[in-house]
Amino acid sequence: MAIQRTFSIIKPDATKRNLTGKIAAKFEEAGLRIVASKRIQLTLAQAQAFYGVHAERPFFGELCEFMISEPIVVQVLEGEDAIAKNREVMGATNPADAADGTIRKEFALSIGENSVHGSDAPETAAEEIAFFFSGLELVG
Ligand code: ATP
Ligand code: MG
Image (cartoon, rainbow, N blue to C red; front, side):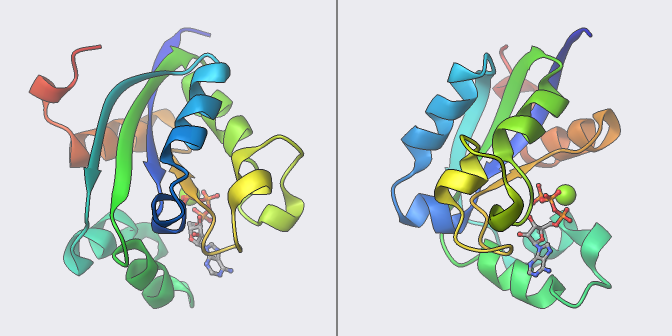
């Protein structure tokens, strides 16, 4: 596997509880380098666009309201097999199913307020990085 980049969000439930540093440490301990990072607050339109793939799901409204409820930290993570590695470090969507030592097992509050987002494939990683970062912000 080659060096990849993936996109990560530290979600409102985690920024609110001052978990940004602890979550970033998990990425770094797993060998993922944080090559870009910024704290922002999404508008409703931005949250709806970002999670557009889930527009028909029953939890879409709740998800978008949650994602705009507090600031988030958006990051680009780089490393060997970064997309899969990040999903591994994150743990399962529902913290009740997440493996020991994962971010969601340690920090998530519920299936909705689950502390982190991570891209699920090379195509979505590229799209999501471009949604939040310009080329100038990606120094590597
Ligand atoms: P993410 O895309 O945020 O990395 P994921 O890929 O593990 O998470 P998805 O199925 O893509 O999970 O769902 C996107 C997000 O929608 C979840 O992370 C969670 O915040 C929310 N979500 C998913 N399922 C539910 C549910 N049943 N009830 C409430 N919120 C949900
Ligand atoms: Mg997803």
